[in-house]
Amino acid sequence: MNDASHILGEMNDRSREVFRRVVEGYLQDGAPVGSRTLTRDFSEKVSAATIRNVMQDLEYLGLLDSPHVSAGRIPTQLGLRMFVDSLLEVGTPDETDREKIDATFEANEQDVSGLLDRVGSVLSGVTQGASLVLTPKHEAPIKHIEFVSLSPDRALVVLVFADGHVENRLFTPPPGQTPSSMREAANFLNALIEGKTLGELHATIKTEINTRRREIDSLAQELVQSGLAVWEGDGDQIERLIVRGRANLLGQDGETEDLDRIRHLFDDLERKRDIAEFLELAEDGEGVRIFIGSENKLFSLSGSSLVVSPYMNADRKVIGAVGVIGPTRLNYGRIVPIVNYTAQLVGKLISDRS
Image (cartoon, rainbow, N blue to C red; front, side, top):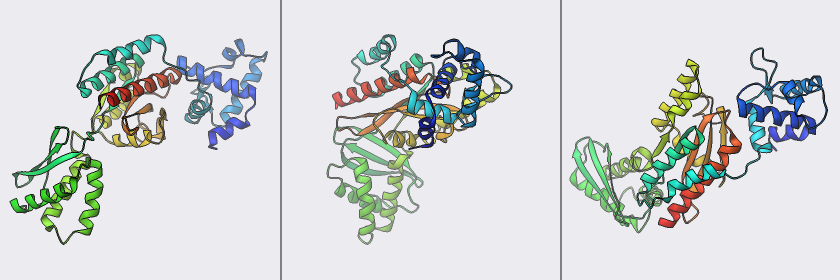
């Protein structure tokens, strides 16, 4: 049991209701919630003084905070986490949101990249946040690999996939390469392919290089390992991040400091720093994951939250993710089902086409 759920278990019904109403009021309006507001529509007849005492207790527990000199309270990050984990009621997307998302998938477009571009745009439009879509890696088995020297410090690895897809990736080869070492490196790799995908080949090669060092020339070894570095993440085609809706986040904040934080977040996103983490984090569970503020280092400086859901191929393997970024004051009850619904549609579409 984590700290938040332990605290929730210690709270009585009145404290839970006060806490839930403060959080829901804050998520809806973005303003501190005061005791008088709660007294008006509370489920039992209680005084404002009683509500204030409960709010003070919740503040002592670290669930609420008093901004500046306001008499109202807002949830802390711990409070938001507890609300999301234990009290958030998640339904299905409303009909209007669902129709907008469905319309994106109705065009019978064969280009998955084009479709995912549109998915990013519709997500940011529907949620009025920023969206991100992590596109799938190309997972078809490899048929042939070739190294091509372009200059002393530039080489190309050409990957021909069994489904006819071809990728060319630039990398920096080891100094002193020769035509024979390039042929030897390619022969070594092609002997191991046997219908493996890039990920499977990568794991096999690491083991093989360690056990067959004497059989493969040291220069060819270095060439293989240089090419592997490209496969591990430096190549543009391995995975692509689509980010849409930057203006939505910038439009929500008037403070210069907040604008700088959002710009910093997007600069990080555009450099793809820590992006692989989204997929790793999403793989921990099939459903939607919610990261609030500093729970993810990418969002700690911007004060933002990420709602992300993985999507899977026909083999139930996680191959990408879709998500929405917004301020920590997101309407989680609405955003979570939208992200979940979109991820399921993307996964179904990709599975159908494969």
